[in-house]
Image (cartoon, rainbow, N blue to C red):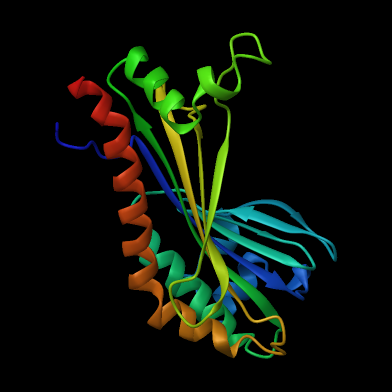
Length: 223
């Protein structure tokens, strides 16, 4: 088995579902609460801020907030812990905000060594001859989503998406969605526990999933 490659592109996103006021999540608010350094309010690329949507970027993250959904995504590697710390600090300030779901997600593009290996892996994910060739001409794998139950005491799921990379030639895209759910929550206090007590386990789980899938893709090189 060849040494498994590092991803060509690797990112993290943190997603909250709850009840938010998009207008307050502007760069100046983060500076005022000492969550971001002074000067960010003038250098951030602000796309829109109103009652329905807030969206802006800095040199290392992108934030989008709707009334029911917040997405904080890394733009630079490595930024995982910084991303977590920013979200942790934000909802320490906004601890009375109702949050019902927390998603700790990874997004990675891996380059495979050849077109043949790429096709072989697609056939391994979704066998074509047995099921699809009788009803489709030249069937090809687009997206596969697999979901498992949580391995801890939280409600939620662990979901994995695999599809051809749109960024890397003969590459595969692997997304892991580690969702924690508290549908009866009336505050954000439980988010702190997820971000501190579950962070390392979540990162380890994502790495194990990704390594397993990439190893399976490369196993075709041995044949």
